[in-house]
Length: 220
Image 1 (spheres, rainbow, N blue to C red):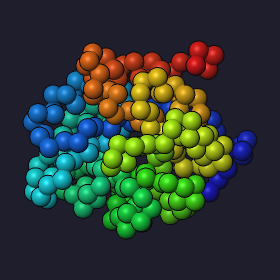
Image 2 (cartoon, rainbow, N blue to C red):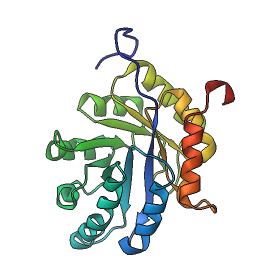
Image 3 (cartoon, helix red, strand yellow):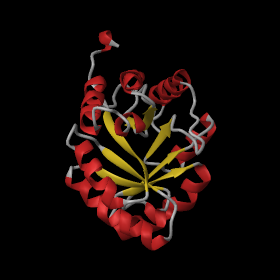
């Protein structure tokens, strides 16, 4: 993997937003919320988290929501369930842990995106990158809702940004964390509950996230 210390490498693009949905069991009930959120600011990608269910139900949800994301100009990824990605027309999948990523990548790449999160150690992150992950994600909550401290996430993002070439995503647990992750070197900043649980509505929350993303360093 190329090092970011190579001065001949072109400057990286400005960081972008990566929107993470709540767990979705009812596509019809979430469609308007998703569309409203995407009207608030430009995002690079949306990760759809589908509630556990039978394959047909998962596919039906995906087919209803994927076009909403793509019509907004964003890539649409499915959390887990790599087997349904092509069937719902999604752009890729996000896998949790190196083993899940390694098992799914051949079926996804090169036509589709294969991202990897749930990387507990630096070694796991390097394994994922060396195996061809299109991005690594640091700081997302686990199945119990626990996540590393913000300091630990920014430390991991900074380490990655200084050394490795594949993009990294930093997960912001609040709008206040968005700028810090961007300043630490994240290529993308993921936002989830802090958007969809905001009392102002998802569009206003996502607009604020975009503002935080572009704050000058001195304002941090």
